[in-house]
Length: 218
Image (tube, rainbow, N blue to C red; front, side):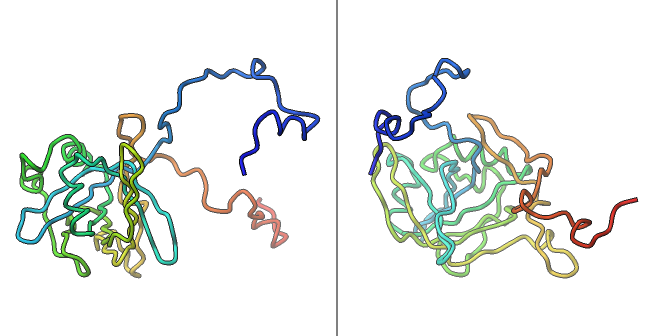
C-alpha cells in the first residue's frame, strides 16, 4: 500500500523539514542509480559467430538459487540471440578490458566480429553454449528463467549455472582475490577504477578487537 505525503504528515505530528530548508534541486524522473558495473555479456547461436554486448544495467537478484539480471533494448543485436537461446555469459571488466568494453557497447555485432576486433579469446563454457571471455577475471554462465517486458528495455532474469575465474588471481592456498583484479565501475557515462577500501561488511557494528581482549595499543 502506498502512503501519500499528506496522509503521512497527518500521522506524524513532527513531520519533515520544509523543502526550502535543504539544498536540493528537483529533476524529472530518470535513471541516476550510479555507479554500476559495466559488464561484457557474451552470447551465441549454434554455428554462428559469438557476440559481445556491454551492459551497465545488470545486477544480483537472488542468492539461492544464485541469480542475476540484465536489461536490454529490443533493437540491440544481442537481444534476439539471448531471447532465442536463453543463455549468456556475464564477464566482469577490469582495467585492462575497459577499452574493449566500451567498443563492445558502441559497435554492433551485425557489422563486426567483436572478439576478433578487440583480440579477445572465446572459450567454451561448461554448462551452456555461449562462450566466456578468457581475458575476464570472472565469468558467470547464465540460463534465462524469465523475460519481463518493461518498456524501453526487457529484463532477463537468469540463474547462474557455473562460475570460472582466472587462476592468476588465486594465491598459494587457492583463495581467490577478487579485489585484486582491478575491477571497474561505470558512472554517468564515464568509466572509473575502484579506489580506496573504506570498510568491510559489518564494520560499523563490529567491536574493536582491543576492547574485546582487554588489551590496549602502546
